[in-house]
Amino acid sequence: MEQDFSHIRKRAVSLLSGCGCEYAEIRLSSGKGTAISLSGDQTDTVSSGETIGGSVRVLSDGALSFISFNDLSRIEYFFTRGLDVSGTMRPRRKTRIRSCKPVRKKFYTKQKKDICALSLEEKFNLISSYNSILKSSRLIQTTRAVYRDLRSVSVFLNTEGSEIIYDKAYCGISLASIARDGAVIQPFHDSFSGYGGFDLVENREAAAERVAKTAVDLLAAESAAGGVYRVVADQKLAGVFIHEAFGHLSEADFIYENERLKKIMVPGKRLGPEELTVIDDGTIPGLAGYIPCDDEGILPEKTRIINNGLLHARLHSRETAEKMGEAVTGNARAVGVANQPIVRMTNTYIENGSRDTREILEAAGDGIYAVGAIGGQTNLELFTFTSGYGYEIRDGKLGKMHKDIVLSGNVFSTLSNIDMIGNDRQMFGGLGGCGKEGQSPLPVSFGGPHILIKNVLIGGAP
Image 1 (cartoon, rainbow, N blue to C red):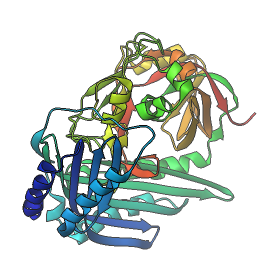
Image 2: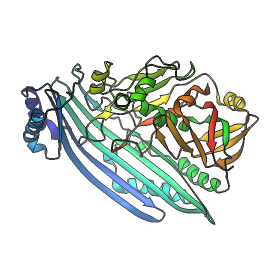
Image 3: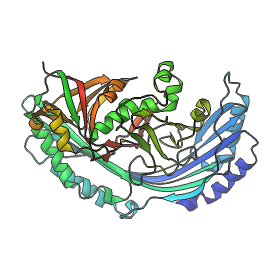
Image 4: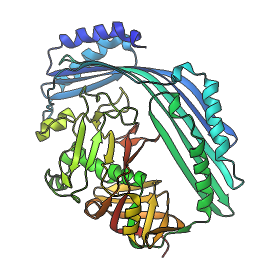
């Protein structure tokens, strides 16, 4: 696939070397993907297609233009158009970006089983086998099983001399069962994805069995009574909380545009207990949020957003780093070459603490153990999440199963109320991805260990 770009790449390098503007970049991408979707006994979608495209971003006299296209043979025309657009703009506030050292590297995804070497029939048979497991109980009304893969090559070039080639392979599945008993309907789902080969989605029979069983078990579960509880969040819920409720607040474009947040998100401010460390790290191979470089040609790093309870860093693009006088972090990302890079998370997680799960449950006394997350919303520092399911905790031991566990609160109060942090961090990433400013789904991962939080407001049955 890389050879398809060899001639275009030379033309792009020539355009960049003679443009005479403050800064310019060219991104190119070519890929082939498969999508299969099954619902119950029906086949909704079986498709395989190719995509190709590119974009140009030009900064000239403080004006930033962006042009996307899918006809690579006309790259000279589109680059000239980008120069013309930025040259005619007269912005009231000039854009500046951080200059960086050039990066000249090639990256590729290691695959045990190459997704391009497998037939469409093999992929269909795998997801069909999982779908059969999802509908194994008589109480399962319907199911949904989805398989997706993408093999692509992307090229990044800029006027600083960067030349980055990334041959990547992404693969994932989503599994859901919807159980019904009379008027009671209960869905449950799980999802897995990452950068790698077909082996990422093989041997997931146990996961499909767990999805079906959980959906059926939830039919008889009681809703949690409303009140204030000590809550033990499992690794997935801890990760969703830190990504959705806090992670987005640490994205510098959001901070820069919000005066209230500027006063709150000040480096050095205490946000949680000394044991709390929150990290965004795009360098972890295989995870859904892995990026060898961001979409501005910056190598990612392990960014400690919170370090020992203190706000330590914010996530940046070249533009926000220049505006706020801080270092770039490699967090400018786009869902594709047709989109402009904006500040986005990669793999965001709570770092391990020192406690094991048994200690945490015992310390919870009487409370709620909340598992996973099926949805929620945030509004600045306020959040509401619905846990996938959970259990009551009585005298430090798990009791009856609960559903409809809705957790609400202020993210900063909740961070300060973290009482214990476990030592069993896990990472999660599914096909859904993250959304921001109309760009979705962007592959990300999130996670953490078990954590104990005091004074959590739970909405539910009175």
